[in-house]
Image (cartoon, rainbow, N blue to C red; front, top):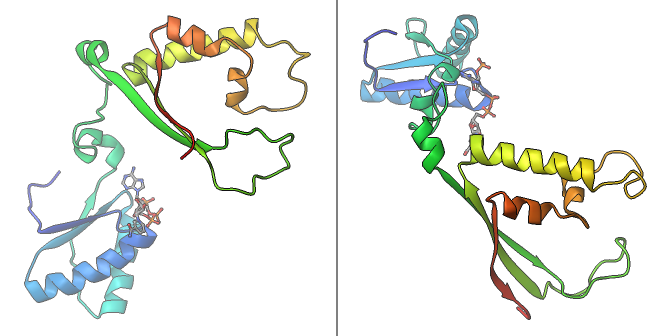
Length: 196
Ligand SMILES: NC(=O)c1ccc[n+]([C@@H]2O[C@H](COP(=O)([O-])OP(=O)(O)OC[C@H]3O[C@@H](n4cnc5c(N)ncnc54)[C@H](OP(=O)(O)O)[C@@H]3O)[C@@H](O)[C@H]2O)c1
């Protein structure tokens, strides 16, 4: 990569939004005497963007530097260190945790069938937290394997007749939550409110 420094680099210049950004940067850079470059994956597409922007803005953009960059090669830069190639260290996996808080609103009263709608505003709120070990490499295998065990051991063909079900079906009348709790995934009701 070149050592040249720019005031602006328009990464994603070839995108729908990027082309508007190039027009704006071209105008401002000219007024403010700033240096800019465009960046992206395809030299050909970036050259076309500069030509078209030049026609729209009336600015001389043919000499604008082009940087070839694929963000997938620099995940640590574009995610401020959150993601990097090679995955987390052993220590990060051992000490990492996840926590998801879900806020659900609904009705205490269950209607007789799915086609009927409530004619009043929701009257109940529940805040639930699910937490556990490092999400990507520790919790995901735990959850996947327990889902597979539930599918193999608890779901009979007679019970679920039909085509493709959503994943939520695996929680219905099974011990999946108990299985997950036994395997280090925690479920907590943070708050239950009725009436609202
Ligand atoms: N006001 C707002 O908040 C607002 C409004 C609109 C859009 N946006 C955001 O702006 C972004 C672009 O939206 P868009 O509709 O313009 O999308 P788009 O037309 O699909 O453009 C995506 C751009 O990203 C580039 N790109 C994709 N993968 C890349 C990679 N691995 N390495 C380098 N470049 C890569 C594409 O380059 P190639 O040409 O090489 O594929 C293209 O220039 C999105 O994040 C969108 O959410 C925000």
